[in-house]
Image (cartoon, rainbow, N blue to C red; front, side, top):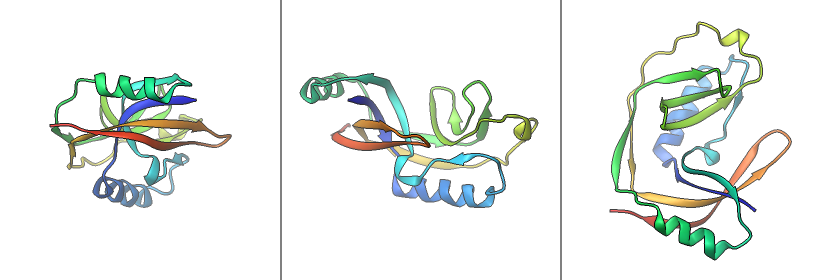
Length: 141
């Protein structure tokens, strides 16, 4: 199975993103559903042994901290719109055609998220989108 380690977006952050998506519903993008919003810490890999994957989760060195999302950016290389900055971001939309998004600038945002739990997710790739399922969580201090 395809798994990765990440931080699931809180309900508050999900609501902020969904409200932002609604305000920009005219953009030619595929919006990421609220249940799938997350920040990736360890990129996906294939693993048949869930216990082995859980050990990898326990090995991740991560401290509780506050993440500030202060911008919405179009990343043309990866064909995504994300909140945050490279290395600490949440993808909120994907697109195929970049032309309609060229030169677009979004208003600043100011959303804060307390990162206090990391999660081992299962990733199921579908024809239109991926879905992510929580396998195990680790609370950090």
